[in-house]
Image (cartoon, rainbow, N blue to C red; front, top):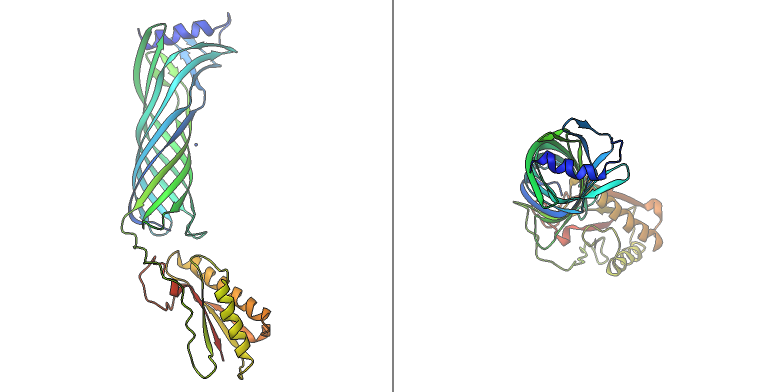
Length: 342
């Protein structure tokens, strides 16, 4: 049974009398799977008959994507992917009338994407957006009344991507991803005289992405407060912070209170409050985080009785590490604020 005849047979049943979806640097790979929802697909003509409101309707389907790409270290990525989508055919509808059909629509083919990661927002949750273009083959397999027909045609494809990645701290380079994709195919694919219009798909996927060459995470270390003695009364104090935090712990408040109390026992002209971070995250993000940490310590000093006009605040970001490390290393002793009494 020809493909055109199969669709014509189903359409005639429905006809009334008058018919009409941390910057990566270097190579990475990814896998994703989820659900695919197809919008109603217009059937523009059957042989010599043209239609305005004849639609092919499908059931909820599935989608799988495999990709390999390259990160440029500044948030931008370029990748090649191969995707597969499957939706079962449900019915053909026209002007409120419908006819049930069997079979499936399968789409598969390559895409090239360009994406951007918003890594300056937070190293622990990285949103991203992207666009892509490529080619998809579409196999229409239809069965009506015990007869069936199958045909494959290709079309130009385009897509938009919105997603987010959550790094897995125990495995450097590995991230869990969640994303929405819109995939569109240009219209007028011809199946033995049956012309189908635009094919629009909405996909939601969960996946994994692995970036090669990511720096290994250091062994966890408990933050250590180590006042640096300069006289019988210390003039330098270190306050440590949890990763990606600017909140003071109970131990940190004790050290700040000690610095505030001792500042009244010596002559001083000012208290310098200098903030630092480790090397995980981007330099821009770390600079802001170091300033927030210094501001938190300064506010606690004022609360403990130090005059606000005697305090100067400065953030140094990931520069001047207490423990020298490479890039992307979560070193606890580098996440600090130093209080210097002068």
